[in-house]
Image (cartoon, rainbow, N blue to C red; front, side, top):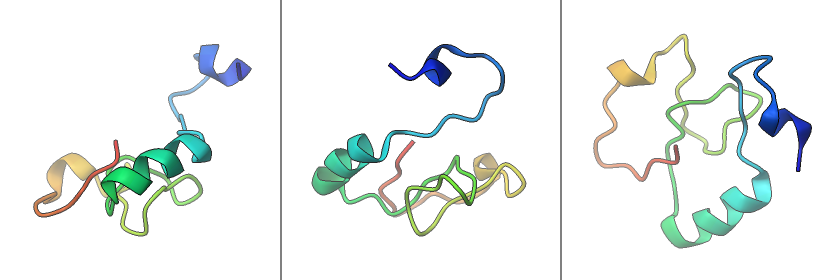
Length: 64
């Protein structure tokens, strides 16, 4: 296991790409509402500065 999975040094966590790829094959995600530019899993994503909780998520398949 990755040491970062057991660390509380910060609250930035990225899903391993292979896990996302497997899930995405089934669900075809098109929004990552909790991302940073360097770890976004979808073309459309919301950063903390955009505040995804205040955005419309309607009509999308979200990866969270």
